[in-house]
Amino acid sequence: PYPSAIDAQQFILDNGPTISGAGATTGTLYFWEHWGGGSHVLAEYQGGYATYNLSGGTPSASLGTNDPDVATGGTPTKIPGRYIPVAQGFFVTGEATGTINFNNGQRVFEIEGSSSSVFVRDSESSSPTANADNGDNRIKMRLGYDSPNSIHRQLLVTVDSRATQFIDWGFDALLIEDQMDDMYWMIENQKYSIQGLDAINESVVIPIGIHARDAGINSISIDALVNFPTDLAVYLHDIELDIYHDLRESAYQIHLEAGEYLDRFEITFTARALSIEEFDTEQIDVSYTNDENSIVISNPNNIEIESVQIVNMIGQILSLIHISEPTRLESKSRMTAYG
Image 1 (cartoon, rainbow, N blue to C red):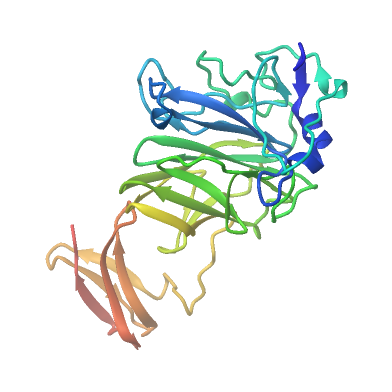
Image 2: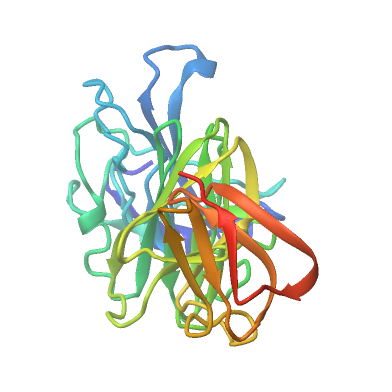
């Protein structure tokens, strides 16, 4: 509405009572980005909403393709910054009644093109993730997801003393779109693309949800760590398989059937230590014998074992033996191995 940039943070704070919405978005701005489809038919649009709130900005989901008209390659295309450029449209979710407040106090002089002033609709290709948080001294983690259908989603978590581990006005961004595949933070059983926390340490657990239209490989990785403690690990915990995967080392890849997984994955900052009662690698040894085509479990101390699983590198369970009553396997037991 003005021939100048708008300070998005000031706009959010000035409109707190109006754009909070009962159970809807909480102080978040949404910027539509159309990244494919080649059609004016609404159902054929390929695009999504980049988001911005007091925690920072995230790009829209994007489609991993080498099409020269899209050219995202599965990576984020635009990340909104603090200053909204001249003529940049955006959305908020309002209450049933109320007035959206634009005022001169929100106007700033900010040159478009910097990491803090990004015109989302601009078709010029860019790789904004590396510079998206310039000048922000808060701890941030940008988590990436690549789906079976080549959708890429980036999530943001930001440490801010004003936020909590619950839903916070202005710091958590509700997901308002429905991609064929997607990943999101789960906060109080709702889906979010941005989450604010008051701390990140070894006691913090951040639940993640995923849905996939088709069966295939799902990949979770770190897109960026900003001002992050160098000695703090980042693990993807697959609760069903009880696997803690170090995301600082590599992406976690898992084959999932089509469906919704809202309570299977979480981010932790320490791996759960197994007790002797659960498993002790010094007392149980597992090996494979080519001659017998068998996996040998050596259990000389007769530790109680309830089940045995063989899991491949992409998380598929190849063999599962449930023991009807907890028992102590013989000192050496064998089971048929699978290729």
